[in-house]
Length: 502
Ligand SMILES: [Zn+2]
Image (cartoon, rainbow, N blue to C red; front, side):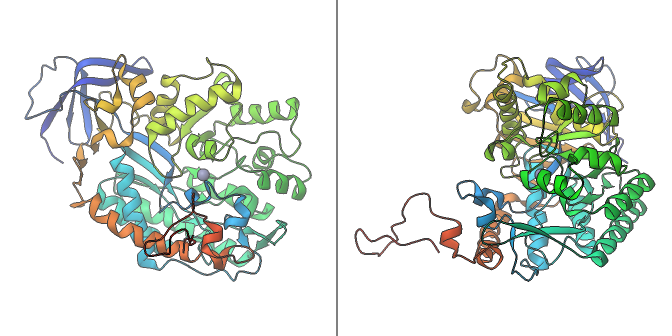
C-alpha cells in the first residue's frame, strides 16, 4: 500500500459533517492509499503530491445500484410500443438460446463498466438484460466480470442473474409463465458459489451480491430458498419488484391477491439486504389507500432500500408516486441508471422533476434529496458507511466534475447547478480507493480509451438488433420492430421512394 499523501484542491469540495454533506469553497481533500485523511481547508500535515483541479467540484463517487451493465436495448422501445410486441417479452414459440456469443458478452461488460466510471460512478451493482439468453447468467461469465471490474479499478458488487421462471407472450398479448425447476436450483447454487468465490478472492474493491431476476418469475419454493440464502450469505440482494403491471397482476393472480411486497415479506425477503428496483406499483393489482399504506409500512419496518431509476421510469410514463411518503417514512432510497445514458446527473434531475410532477407538489423533492440518494442512500443500502461521502477514514472514491463547461450555465450553487444542467460528460476524473481510474478520456488502470471500445460497440449492437425477429412475437422484421422515426431516404434510391430500415 502506497504511503504517498496526496492533496486535491478544487473550487468546490463536497465534505461530510453531522450526518450529511456540506460544501467547502476552495476546498481540499487529502488522502493516503485508499483512505481519506482530511477534507476541508488548510491541511497542516505533510503532503507528497498536489493535484489542483481548478474550477471543478470534487465530490464522492456516485453509487449505482441498478447499473447499466451491457449494451442497452431498452432504448429501442422508447418510441416503439407496446413493449410486448417489440421483443420486451419473449415470444411463446421462441426456443430460448444465447443470442450473444461469450466474447460479445465480455465486450459488453468492458464497455458498460468503462461507461459507468466515465460517468463518475465509482460503486456499481450492474444489471443486464436476460432476454437474449438460453436461460440466465453464468458463473464463469461473472468471474470474467470480476476480472474486468478489477482491471478497470472499479468498486463493484457482482453476481450472475438467476431465475426460476420467465414470461412469454402470444400474438394477442396473453402472457404465460414458463419454469424450469432444475435450472432454478442450479441458479441458486451457482449464485452461492459465486459469492463465496468473490469473498475468497479478497480484493477490497470487489464484493458479491445476489442478483435474482424479477419477483414474478419466482415461485414460493424458490422465494423461500432465496430468503434462506440471503440470510446465510448476508450480502446485498437485488430483486426487481413493484416494477410493472404484468408483475403485479401475475403476483395477485398466482398468490391470492397479494401485493409484491406482501409476498416478499411473507417469504422472508424483506430486510436490510434487499435492493428493490423500482418501487412504483404499490398496493398490488387493486391498490387502495389502505393497501398502499400497508406496503409503505412494510418497506419502512424492513430496512430494505428502494432503488429508483428515474430516467427509465419516466421514459415508461411511470414514477414512484409515493416518493414524498417514502421520504416521510425514512425509507432508504438509492439510485440506479438502468438504461443509457448511465448518467447520474440526468437521473437526479429527472428524479426531482418526476417527484414533483407525480405528487403535484413543488416541495416534494430537491437537488439535495437526489444527490443524497446517489451517494449516501446507496452506501447505506450496501452497508458501507465509508462510501458515498468524503470524510476522514472513508474510502477515497471521488469524482472530479469540470465547472468550466459553458453548458453548465452559471454556478450559483454547485450541486443545484449540476443537478439542473450537469451531465456525465462533464466528469473529468474518477478515483476509486485513491487510484485514478478515469482521467481525461483514458481508462487509466486498464490502459485504454473508451473511444476505442466505442467503435466496436456499434457492431455488437447491430448484431443484437438483427436477432429481434427471432425472439419477438409474430416474428416481424427489424424495420417493423424498430421503426425509423421519419421515413428513410437511402442514398441512391429513386427520388421520393421510401425504403424501410433494415
Ligand atoms: Zn431495473
